[in-house]
Image (cartoon, rainbow, N blue to C red):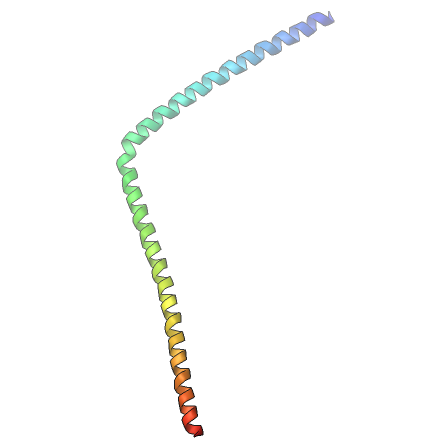
Length: 102
């Protein structure tokens, strides 16, 4: 009796495993087929839209990069100008101070 039950359980497990495996494979195939088909259709119908979106994104990125570059350049220029102005002011002050001391 024990052996029969054990054998029955094993058979049941095997059958169940095979069924689940087959179902899984079929589902996987269907999903793959649907995905490929959808992707193909999506690619065909949306290529123009994708290109436009890409162009817009590129333009936006370019603008942002330009703005950032402009800001950085402005900051650097400001710093340089500040330094130069500081040096000139320092020189002038030094000259005046020297003249006053003479």
